Length: 107
Image (tube, rainbow, N blue to C red; front, top):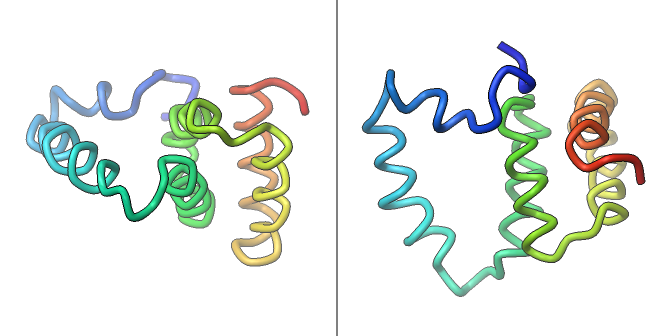
């Protein structure tokens, strides 16, 4: 299944693993994302980087959109993807770039 098959991987997975969705909604968002030690902008950048490095393209569209809502620009996301090319691999950066372009439009 590619990222184009559904807009929210969590919603697509919910019928099969409702406890995972519940854990995300009751623990990840309020406790981890709600921790003021890191800003939402910083958390978004870390999350996007981890998804790219882990090859989790299905999760990228939602998190790229959230990153923009949390204050990251397209230029910053582009620079992060380029930087990750050297640490996560050029194929990961190319895949992430394609997902970012399809999700956010050209730089």
